[in-house]
Length: 520
Image (cartoon, rainbow, N blue to C red; front, side, top):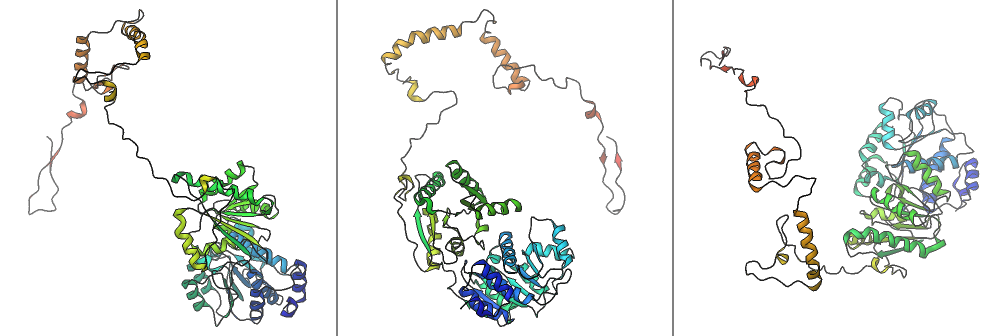
């Protein structure tokens, strides 16, 4: 089948031909015809199979007829992340460049004013994330009563991000006569419930088994371990660099996924330090920085992209040759989406996963979902300390003896009780006269300093310090380090001479009576 057989508008066929595509993918071939007829579609396909074109092409074909009204968009596309929403907008611009259609993109990190101006003029296609869309609705700047077609993209990702209550609320704002196109890579029970509630007799299009990886991707599992737990991240970084060097020029573009945002910065700095061209992408970055980083990655200005799962969904960058899981994803479904960034549009790709012993349970969950084992790889260039091996037993360290501060250990005191002591070695005997001279010099007072006080004077002074509360040193017997603090003196402070009023008890039968105050 070709696109010419799908009864599309000639202007749309011209735009598709200019992109270089001639044959639709399975999800497009099965999903576009019922969508053109106005039927609800439930599309289930792994990432990278062309789901965006499967709903954008029939939407544009239906929008050719009609006109948009102010603040009332004709179609609505919901995406879980800003990057995916921006990519959907790019697809609409590509396929509708020969058709006069207006479009607005509502995502966070962008000024409300610019978005309001586009909505006020009227848009045919509204692409938004759920949070920003509801912000515009609550501000009274947007009405969803004119929606003809509603699309939910990456529904399972919506579930992971906690957007399902927002999705239900948005569905109830749209007319029940709308057409709904619902796409997801996996079908958890909550997503199934959502489709049963808001879709009307949908055409189910499933081109691949749910939660399955593309056959064009070569997977590999590299075991990494270290002698100590705190050395494991360093061992993983070294293993990553080793694989990158072994792959060499085969790495055209690669995405490195980390579970934690703090690890993204560490891995990025490590790769930069070793001469790699690398950038980072995660949810805490400003939207302009995120878009600029993605543009640099698409244009090959940077080769490696260290990212969180914000880059695991919907990013269509065909040139990605490798995907590295620096951390094993804690959710098995995320593994499919991560490695789906490579091997797209029929291309081949490689996906490496660096796993420690503690992450073995997550690897087992992934293999159970895939119903196959991930091939274990033994990298020949891997440093010895990063290859998985049982951790050596820790040697028992001698316990340190607990002694009072300032006292010497028993081994250096000698056996005073028995009167026996070890004989000093020859070097110690030679150094003994020098030590005695030093001690004598230390005991002798200098000419510019007063002679040390006698024991009786020091004892009287210490007793005086204990009587008056210890002074600055708290009575611990230390020498004074400055003038003493003066107290209040021997007189009674004036505030302590103020009489305290007393409250006399009231009669038991008069509860409302006010208490009488007597001066002391």
